[in-house]
Every structure is written in C-alpha cells, then in structure tokens.
Length: 107
Image (cartoon, rainbow, N blue to C red; front, side, top):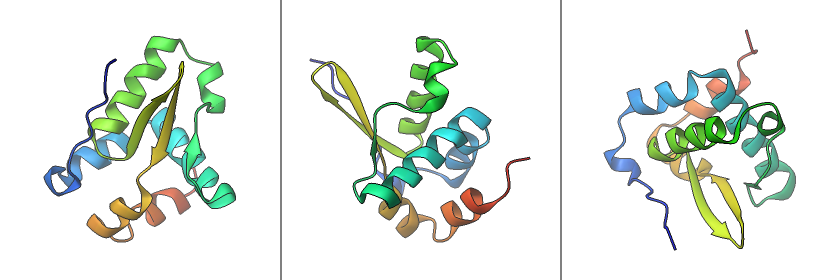
C-alpha cells in the first residue's frame, strides 16, 4: 500500500505555502476543508465540489501540491482518500496566514 509523504512544517518555507494557495482551485479546496473543520470539528473532507469539474489527474496534482506544501494531510480509508487541513499546525508555524488568506474576498 502506498503511503503519503507529509513534510515537517518546520522544513516548509512560506513561499511554498503561498505558491500552493495562489491557485484558485487549491484555494477553493483549502476553503472547503477549513469550512468542514469548523462545521464538523474534524476537518475532514474527501469530496470537494471543485472535484466534480476537473479531471481526476488534475485534482490529484492539486492535492499533491497542497500536501507537499504542508497544508493538508492525506490518508487512505478503503478506496477513498481522506484529506485534512493541518490548520493548527499551519497557524502555529505561520500565525494569521490562513485567516488572512481565507478571509480575503475571491477576486
């Protein structure tokens, strides 16, 4: 079984996180995971609304970028992949970053 690689956030530069958040689709994914975190308290989402609009390979690439930048953690559960926003860890490493980015109006 393949395992996902999750970087230590102390090794992730701010530029990598900002790059991941600069794409509108990835930003929408992070917003959705953040909303799920607030609604459910668990931060889990396996299907984003944007996933229905894009090819599977494109979505896989977006999740890979988010994972390599340290924004999400992924794990397999049966045939599904569960993605969790690493909100507390990101807030500890880059205080206020997610609040600022997610509260900004979509342009």
